[in-house]
Amino acid sequence: MQNHPALGDLLVMSDLKLVIGNKNISSWSFRPWILLTQFGIPFEEISLKLFTPEYAAIIDKYSPSKKVPVLNDGDLRVWDSLSIAEYLAEKYAEKGLWPKDQIARAKARSVTAEMHSGFTGLRSNLSMNFHGRKSDFSIPEDAKKDIDRIQSLWEECLSSYGGPFLFGQNFSIADAFYAPVVSRFITYGVKLGSKASEYVQTISNLPSYKSWGEGAKLEVN
Image (cartoon, rainbow, N blue to C red; front, side, top):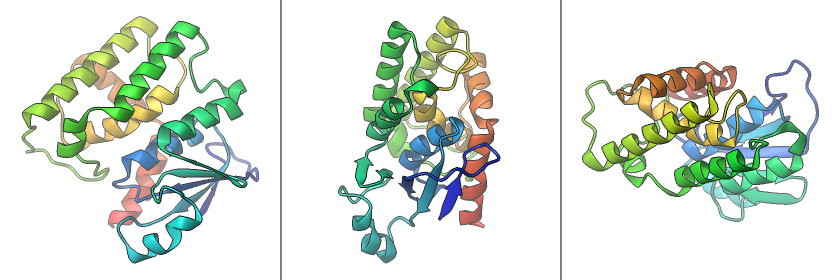
């Protein structure tokens, strides 16, 4: 277990407990983790090893769905990455986890929801392996279609809102939801256009992204 003051220097006690799976493979866990960390929201990290007897023995303590991620806030349990993000956006409204502009916010929700519920070709064929590198990987056709759609979404958002993040100068829930995609594109050596490549660099250079990577590296070494 770790206490996270996020990227700040002072440890602030918090009732928030984020239960996650293995950092090298759990893309769903990565989303709320990078969201909390990037916005400097203090939380306690509880990391469980997926697909183990230990996981099966303890998960009921934290998650009614028996899945991760799950956020425990005192007696409240919030499961599913999108529900966690929405809860945090309401609880910390002053931090602006969604874009402030109504139209931008609606679009950000659509972009996020599409990631949350779609892109099965990408998920099935390019599973998250944060520290893996597959330079000779041949991308199946259904995954290529998803990659093209994601690149189109990124380029549209970056052009419309000026970057460097999907909805302008500020990191948002939408960026958190595409952070695992960034890691997949790096792992599998996916070739992208200039705007999408710049976005991959923007996200992968964030201290929060690198911090997750350091944890993932410890798991595979």
